[in-house]
Length: 348
Image (tube, rainbow, N blue to C red; front, top):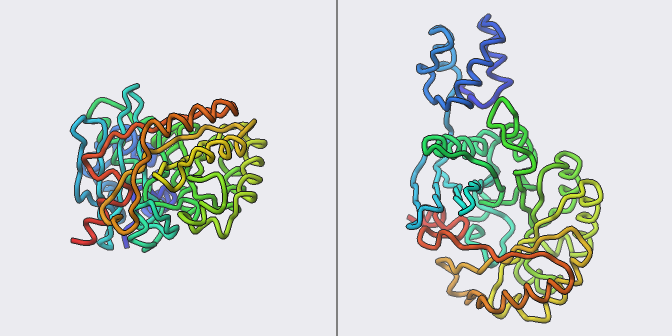
């Protein structure tokens, strides 16, 4: 049986079994995570016998790249990975105009949340990803950007999705990529997005007080959320806001609220006042996301809210001292919806 090279505990165990000195792990670690060497034979700082031990016991990749698409403006690269079980997951590199580079990673194959506006729900939940499968997405992006003489700065757990249903793997991957001797990403530049699995928000608060939290909100009341997000039946708004108040009290960190604007569904102007009252006097930042129609939504008949309506929402929120932004869409030409590439591949 072979193990992932990202399994530090197992690497050290195998080195010990082969009577190889512990300091050798630091050489392996430096070669892989600082020099991005992805061939055991090219790790010249360790003896040949040790390279053979690594080849016999470990693999670099459990994911293979099926497709890479880059938007016409070069800002966004969408990577479709294939797992060893012939499943498909996605990661997206976003190059912002401020030179900040963000990677959106997946933590599940598919998603069980069944939000009606999302492409990923068509897959259902096939399984949770292992920690090394999440880590490999980050490592691939970091290596690719290194070859472009740039550097990965932020990671968001907003791809194929729900992070808190796969909490243990997500936790292990965050601890790994923020390790100074590994990919050395700052905790404050990691964001985990959730539909609001309330018990796990409390655990997340304890485990990652410096890591950012984003909430997939999309409506300021239970009635509308129920119609588009079934999870609201399990964890109503009152329970969510209590857990978020506890999070802010413990961390003093601003929470990001994702709000997809769907024409005629959750964009009535009166809802802007509801949203303002819900978030008034809270450490909150609302991110308005223009709805992206994806293939297969014809029967739902959703469309995007006009820009001027979103701007009206913003002006109303300002009365409640709630900060907001409108997300800039950077990748319309490469299947923007989360899960869209994976859905297409599965259908093929």
